[in-house]
Image (cartoon, rainbow over all chains, first blue to last red; front, top):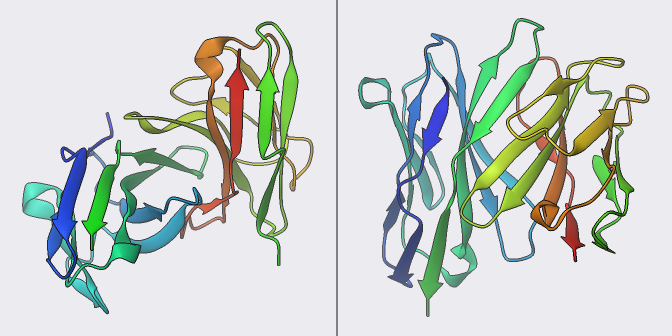
Length: 117
Length: 112
């Protein structure tokens, strides 16, 4: 069965520290997609990144970077020089393609990040 | 472009009452989803719909019914609300290549 594990329930850092959010997934599919979403205190879910299973290149976007390693089934997210505005709950997700051709998305339980000034 | 629109944003029910959460998307997406979010549980899939006229159960379908009225709309009904259904509900949709899930702004439901 598909599964996404975010073992870190809550992380607190001081502003300007780097922080890594861990995500480990399980799937039997050879083709799948991985995602990160951010949920700020306002409650909406904000898409951050999608990665497909064939692309193991790391990605950097400003202060954000993602490390995808198929060998360890991990898709970790690092924030460099964290800011108070980064305080949010972060969700990792995995999508599987169903026989109907649609996608089913499985989410981890989320990691609450608190960045202290 | 409104994206995914959910109504209402907040609702308080008494145990046993019924209600329908409405969701509509204007992106011509085939697939639509209902999730619930509870503290420490992440987002759990209630029901999904691959296309107009089709619906399937997710992880936690008990106590809910859904209706895919047309391509735009996907409603979630609680026939007899229970306190265990107190949660934040999110509707979402995606296109045929599953590029990403587009979420509505959520409905905070309290069942007393």
